[in-house]
Amino acid sequence: MRRTVIAAVDGSSASMAAAEWAAGEALHRGTSLHLLNAVAPRPGSSSLVAPTDPHTRPKNPGWSPFEAADDLGRAHPGLRVTADQVAGQTLPVLFGAADRADLLVLGSHGTGAVSGFLLGSVALTVVGQSPVPVILVRAGHQAAGEHRPDDRHRATTGTPFLDVVLGLDLVRPSERLIEFGFEAAARRAATLRVVHGWNAQVPYGFGDGEPDDGSGNRLATQVTGALAAILEPWRSKFPHTDVVGETMVGRADRHLLDAASQASLLVIGRRPRASRVAAHIGATSHSVLHRALTPVAVVPHE
Image (cartoon, rainbow, N blue to C red; front, side, top):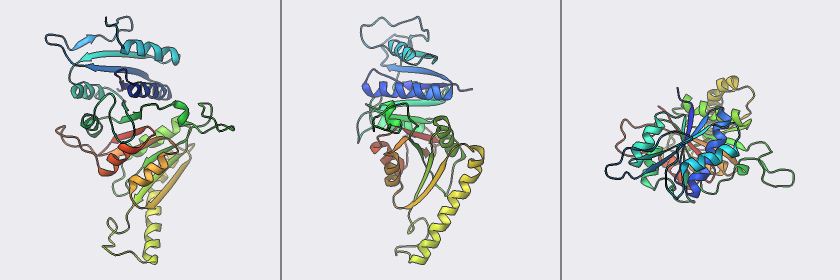
């Protein structure tokens, strides 16, 4: 049974922002946090530089994941934080960790690139192939940014959370993805904003021409009704969660990015590949991951 949130750390500002976010998520879930640091193996060295032991510390003068774990433990009383420093190639280390975790949390640097603990295509490989949800957190992310401003328009963690935004495909809606979004909103006592962007011409059979007003209106009504029908049983399962469904014509990534600009978390889906030969995420997910500033959860599903 998976009971741990794992954050990949390397001492960079991006990875420490991810670790801080992961600490908050572990508290929301009532579980533990594990910090994982992958280092290049030395010839003849064992795979484990330091075992999982709160009393064991690697003998080096630089940054240490064990010290970071201690700091997070002090900052979040009641949260159990452990750490490992593992010698090995990045992808095997992270995939091995993902196989025993609820979530894998990574840091990313700046708008327009996915890096931090991992670099470029490697990060996208993890996002595209992890068997468990992966959350990307931007460098400089602050917990207060997930909350609504107070009466004086100041950032604070003492106000309610901003919405959780869920991007949903109505053609093949995933229960795992929907459940993740509802649970994330419920843990935060936040509104769940479910967004579906659609193109009236291509997916819905209008060909190359623009639909007339009557057809467009009828189709919009059908799409809105389809979203409502999908969400109805989930509203019953989560009666205390406010849910807002939105269907909009246009590129899904643009609508998701607009919604995420005022959100505490953006949740999107990714269908897994049969093998881990190459990274693969859809065009919408790729655009969102490179441009969103709020934490993004990528949930694998069938």
